[in-house]
Structures are given as C-alpha cells and as structure tokens.
Image 1: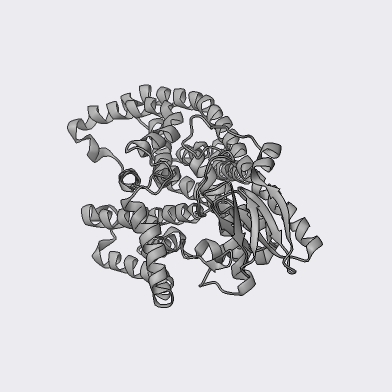
Image 2: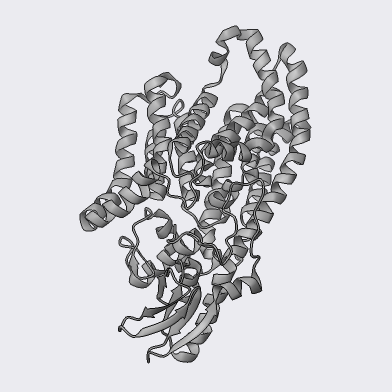
Length: 507
C-alpha cells in the first residue's frame, strides 16, 4: 500500500522539484538591471519602439529599420510589456518561462521511455550548461524560444507512434522555431526529415505525414518572411538573408576569428562536468555487447536513436558555420541532457547479470555529479556577474543622460564610439554613434552645426541646440566596473576595457 502510494506521488514530486529548481536558477536575476549589451538591451529596445509605433511587422532600433531577427521574441516582449509594464522583469520573463518549459519537456521525454529518475536527471543537467542558463533561460534572447520549440518538435516526433495528431504539433513547433531564430530552426526540421527518410518505422510518420509537417510549418512561418521580402525586398535580402544568415554560415564575422576546433572545444567545455555518466554508459555498453554482440546499435531504444541524430545534426551544424559564436553549440546540448538522463535510467532498470554492475556504476555517477556540478554552478554565477558588470558603465551613463535631459527639456545624444544598446534603451533618446579614428574630433549635428566631442564621450544636444557633456565611458568604467577580467573555463566574451573596441553594431 505504501509502495503503491509512493509510486503515485513520485512523478508529481519529481516534477515539482524540477520546476522549483528551474524557476530559482533561471529566474534568479530576472529583475536585476541592467539589460546587458548586446542582445538583451537591443531586443528590449526593438519591442519598446514597436509598442510606441504600433508596428509589429516593421521593426526599428534607435529609429532605424531592424531586420536582423525574426519577430516571435519581439511579439512576446510586446505582450509582457503591455501586461506587466516595461522592466527588466518583463523583458526576461518570456525567456525564463520558455527555459523552464524546456526543462519540463526534457523531463517528459526521458521519463516517458526511461523512467522518472531519467526524466529528473534530463531536466536538471541543462542547469549546468552556461549557454542554456544564459541564452536559453535567464537572458532576454532569441535562443530561449528556439530551444523550446525545437525540443517541442522532437518531443512530438517521438510521440508519433501513439497518435498521428502529433504530426500537426511537429509542424507547428518547427514553424515557431523558424520565427524564433530563422535558419537555426532547420536543425529540428532536418531531424524530422532524416528520421522519416532513414527510419520511417521508428516514428510511423510516413511521407504524407512529412508533407503535412512541412505544410504546417510553412503556413506558420512563411507569411512573415514573404511580407518582409515584399515590403523590404532588397534591404531584407541584404540584412537578414545575406548578412545575418548566409555570411554567418560562410564567413568568420567575429572581431577575432575563432579556430576551426573552437566549436568542439566549447561543446566539451560545457558537457565535461557530466563525465561521471561514462561509468554507467560503460556498463550499458558492456551489457549490450554481451547480449547483442556487434549488433549492439540495434539494441538502442528508438527515442535514444532520435536524440543521437539530433545531437549529430546540431553539432555538425555548429561546426560547419564559419562564424563561431560560443552559444551556437546550445542546440547540441539539449540532446546531451536527454541521453545523459536515459543513461542513468537505463542503468537502473537493467535486469539479470547486467543489474549487478550497471546499477552500482549508476549510483557512483549520481554520487559524483553533485561535486562536478557545484564547481560548474560557481563558474556560471561568476561569469554572469562579469557580463552584467560589462554593461553597467553604459547603463550608468544612460541614467545620467536622462537626468541631464530632464533639466534641459530633452534632446538627442551623441557618443563618440561604438553603438551601445544599453545606452539607447535606458536613455529613451535617439543616440548618434560615430567611431572616430582620432582621439578628438568634431561631430556635426542634424543641423550641420559642429559638436566637439572627445573619444568615448557622451554629450546631450537639447532642443535649443545647446551641447552639454554628460559623461565619458572610460571614466565611468573605472568608477563602477573592472577594467579587465576574463572568465576561465567558459568560452564566453570577456569583459572589454574602455581602450578596446567592442562589437560595432548590436547583435
């Protein structure tokens, strides 16, 4: 009786534990300013200007056309801004919610085929991946909806064997992933297509089901892309298709191009804390070889085969893209969590002679994982603090500009240096950014009048034409932020000093 009651309560308790840990970890700094450069402040500003202009198809940033990203995140931000008001909380809420949703999907996928423990582990493992915690949950970024809908697509794909109605959900999820981050959504779509072509019996989707999936995906995603091509033809083609998609695939666009092996280096840096899982994996491999011999691959459960394909497609895509930004490995980390959870679950459910060595190896792995995860957690938190500190100087300057503008009746800002999205968002004013080659130079305002500005200096031009110096980025940085600090062990952008150029345009 007691065992029966425990079995009924265990799934709910496990899911509640996962939800609690996910919300605490991903929502930890949800209301902490500032929204960081580059992406958080950029996306929030795009959504802010969309609300001001009531235009949710033709986006702008700093008053200029913005065609670098698909619209789903901006639509979501617009909804949270309208509901809760503009704040750091509202900007990050969609990403946190989608990140927690991804953890729940991972739990459901692994638990459905490998048991509750497998589901719990699969849901917890991503909380040790920096790029999932950052880009897939805590930060306002397009990666969170991409990862959620990609995971939803594979989840629905693995449920095809039970009901064909999942076909529509696969297509809808792929379409929403396309509206989240464009070409990156081809990863789950490729998994679907390859699965149907190579192993159709594993999902029972069939060619007709594949056509349905592609049709639903197109119905959801195509209208926005067609609209942009129709209304912003050449600009959309040059900005989004060429610069943001094709050139990122074909060329190095980083300030400092990464080496060919940087993707694998980043990937292994993210997953290496899971090395204790090699113990039960070795036990399962030995057990499989003893029972199936060289046909061991045929003994791999169908869901795990799909996840292995997902891992291969995502990792190959990240390696193939020539622009090697660290978070491009994020789509490959999700199937790793699933496979890790499946390894633990399968090791505990072995029977016969294999049970005598697989289970102890799984227990040993579970005993070691808290120690490897603890060091990872500390590294993630310190890196977050550094990334937040990087954007604080421009945030402080923006807030000082707001105070100056209140005294002078508004105006526009001029900054001698690279574009700083945090300054744009928090100042609430139009900002002119110029990167000069000389330490001192003259800017011409919109009326052609010369404005003398030193390098990295911010000035306010009020409605009467009077120019007032607001602040200098170098001075502000020295006052409130570290000059230089590099996060060891994580392939993330290091903090830039005021004497070092950062990215010239917002991501």
